[in-house]
Image 1 (cartoon, rainbow, N blue to C red):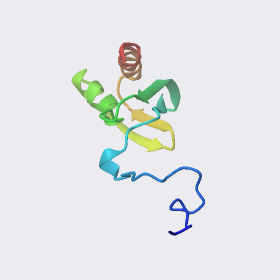
Image 2: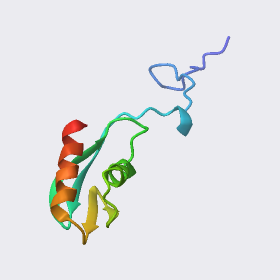
Image 3: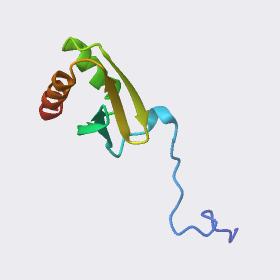
Length: 99
């Protein structure tokens, strides 16, 4: 009879855990500060694994707003426009309030 501890000093047995990326569950919500022409306009929170920041761009295009560019800098989603700044801000306000 062997006196070896099958847990090698661990107080609890180690169970098989699959850490493959396709099985990972999103545990935290990612939140980004959204700016238009360097003016803060709201927060975009990615609540599910299927949400992405490009959803903001898609929404703006659906609203007929196409004169903009965007970039991600850390947790800041920067939108630049030479078009109707106020219309873009109002559209984003509606978007953030409905999400």
